[in-house]
Length: 410
Image (cartoon, rainbow, N blue to C red; front, side, top):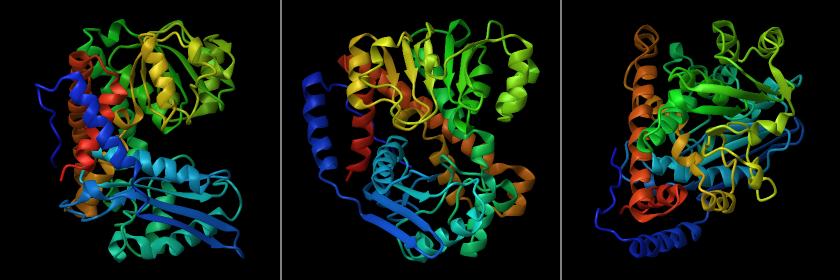
């Protein structure tokens, strides 16, 4: 894999001139694949969008776009298009020869009959898969995803090649359970703090959302000795303040996403409870928004007190809001730089040459994915922070420049 390195003698004017040109080229792109599939009899509606495969040219998978599968009752084609566009930037920023894509299924994963709907969605999408001559790299995990979906999808496709995040015994990286995306967000925060000559052990933080992403950030960033002071999730019923380091039992419950046990332990230690969104407004050094998109906006950005934000969720801030926060001195590592651990793991899985049996025995794909995530994200955050320091620009501008240079490298 190759990644773009900027010229050391670039000045600020040259940077913005080139960024504007690259952005115009990206904005002129139309999705290479924009698909809606329906089965009215079964009540199935789903979407696949491949935004661009330019970054995949010359790569081991050919012209292929990849991203996870979002499953909610409100997911729409427009939402999937937005996410596919972000994936194009994220994959390119990570230096992966992989285009950006996303899929979505409009359904309730907890409803009766969901398995049949999911299987039908997979069968309708099969012709677009790379292994069937298409440009879609396949299914994966996103909001609404669960490990059993890998089993259903692979059974429906009669292949393990079209789903990433599979269990190790199926040749996968198990990146959702392993929290590899959250590992990357933690590494992004550590790298940013190191560049700014700060220590995680002297950093207080708040984590919004304790799903797969937030729980993994809690796990990995907690291992640095950071002071995790606030956690929040609707399944806990609000925001909770931790006045001391989490106990081993509480750590285990949060990491395993055992919300009933977590609530019981928070009650036991008499953790102070606040409103659900109050996690965003606490006086901490570092905020990790790890829930859903659009949680920090023009309407509430003035209430943010954190000095640093590292985005775990996809698009928790708009570009305009990031700029407003930057004017106030808030350093933000954007989602497409901080959270590509999942797609890095997917790339490892898609290109693995070992058998499922060997992977189950050695966990090689898991360890390879974790190491590549650490390496790539630390490199990328260091690179954008250097650009920020040298050219007095915003991290999102530096990150977008890096991504766009990789998309249009040829």
